[in-house]
Amino acid sequence: MDEKILALKQMIDEASYVVFFGGAGVSTESGIPDFRSPKAGPAKYEYSFEEILSDRFFYANPAYFWRYYFAEMVKLDAKPNDAHRALARLEETGKLKAVVTQNIDGLHQLAGSKLVYELHGTIHKNRCIKCGKKYSLGDVLKMQPLPRCSCDGLIKPDVVLYGEALDHDCIEGAVSAIERSDLLIVGGTSLTVYPAAGLIDYAGGKLALINRDHVPCRRKPDLEINAPIGKTFAEMFSLC
Image (cartoon, rainbow, N blue to C red; front, side, top):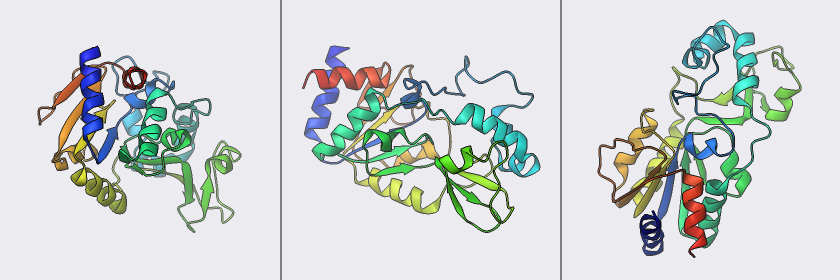
């Protein structure tokens, strides 16, 4: 393992434009569950999480949606872990140019990262579907169990639900950063959620893959490390 971590450090040292692409595994070390894991996902609901977190379900049953959302998606006690902190540190050095994330928890920004492309949106932004008025996470938490706007319209979290398209400007920014990278580090993702997972196809430089388990990838990575990403980054910086 030490050899692979040294190899990762060398790849970063030799690169001039590093981009990080991450998934749920980046935040599991902060206590946020990965619902796609076979051992994860709450069993106390009569619907699957894919069904509840769909645009169709939100409009058909907003009260149930928000009950699930507040209970399972909003983790107020979650704090940035070693992976989030390491990426923020790499950005400070000028090596890391952008973070592309499938997560909605905002932990990258909380750790200090500045340029973050949130492919699936964020729990920290909400808007009225009737008048467009914007609300913070703190605002909607005070409106439980069913957040409504001052115009009496339903409030919807600014997250991409199943059945919705990804934000065009966010995708364009992420693709542009990945295309310019000479090192793309992919971590904490099974690369099964499309279209987000397809973004790594735009990488023309080296590819490093860090994940707890082996992940099948259409392109053979230049380096693969099978370990928790926070632990990997912590060990790498201990060698600096």
